[in-house]
Image 1 (cartoon, chains in turn brown, green):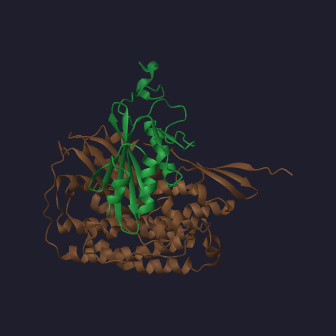
Image 2: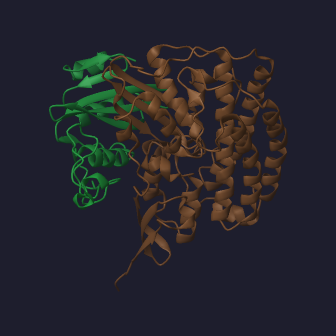
Image 3: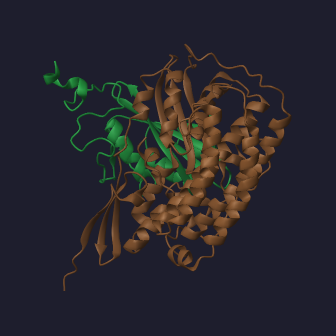
Length: 363
Length: 144
């Protein structure tokens, strides 16, 4: 008897691929025999672009690397410049940045909760999640003028002083209740459990070998959160969420628990900002900014895993080489092994649970 | 970190802070480092065109146990040693470097164009790259 297999293109237009990811699957019946991810449909040449631009010209574009978590990449580029020029951030700027980063992390996780449940066929959580995300985006719009591409962090500080703290206060007073509501609908839901428990099991050793970071690594039982080493977060008290589940359900649960932890961090930043004096900052003059010759690296814990930026400067006002490391790129690479042996209808659940976003993959 | 043993085995390397600069034997060095120290994650591989047709590859290793970063730098011309048998994450990095710099990795047969179209000529992040593909708008001769 000969076994005939079927080659199936999942994507690039499939609604559950969160953008334009194409997975080339080889199927035996409904069982996946092999998976070959194909990316590059959203390539904008962020790294090549950097070599033709001065640092301040490049800064507004980096929000587009991950349009759901733009603050993180602005922060990363600012951090490179600040480290290279030896500027220490004032405490108020640190508090503002931490607060905005964590709000951004919550909005990104909220979108994931909605989109993931939609992948599994449950439509209503999408609207609940977007209702709360909207509150955060409204606040961002008031503060920065933009809902997604903020361009708010500048070298050495922020573009203008923080305002509308009452909005933040309202967000963090409403959110815990709403997250409880999500948990009531989703966490113990028997259909959800059957679709996510023991699906896409990622052993710790394999996760490390594939350079998986962030939530997906912590859901496999490895305690690694770059925020613990990050000087920006110094003085903030928070826990690292680690679960041993290793499956898609654990990745969901870690994200929910992380949102609660982020609210905790925002509370601390907010308490500080309410009492703080008006902002005094010494911005780095961005015109004709030249970095001293050498290599600079910076890292940050972004919602989709560790993000790194590498800059090699030759002493001019443009970087000689600039490289981004993004978490999603490695999650896509992991799919070639994680999907093997699963059934086709679980492929969406497993790929969705890794929180892949394609602009971050393609850069 | 005890580097005496490392320097005894590989005597022509230079140690600068947490960066090791080696001349060759990349696969052997990385194997030695992960076997003898606690480094277990390859965060990324960065390639830099340093002129004269040479490219510097910087391997960013990390130890989850000790929370330490280590950089290993090696300079290659057209071909480098693949480490996909040690780190599976290198499949992604090596493919990206092939696409952008045209470096082949011996031992990784699966290299293909990743971001660029399959029939694209040239490797965009090399310093000697000329943007002369006819599909680019500014190279369209009919548009004069």
